[in-house]
Image (cartoon, rainbow, N blue to C red; front, side):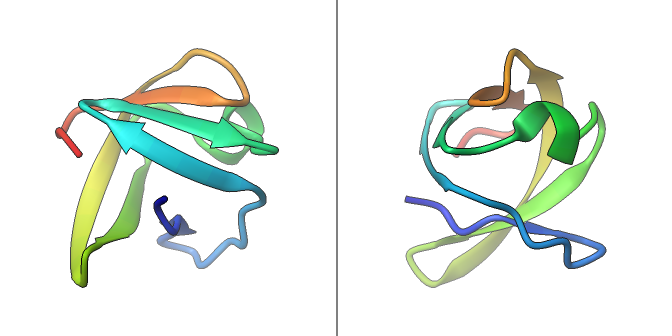
Length: 68
């Protein structure tokens, strides 16, 4: 699971899991919470990684430029 946070510290809903460049959410609102080019940070095993949104397929699926 990934903890999501926006640069403007917007609180997001739901939970998410990542594989490759795809982030899949449950009870998320990716389409309204993000836009292409947005940056968000994840905590991956104690290391913070900054990810860039490449595309948004739906409220529950988005892809990133970087690999998770």
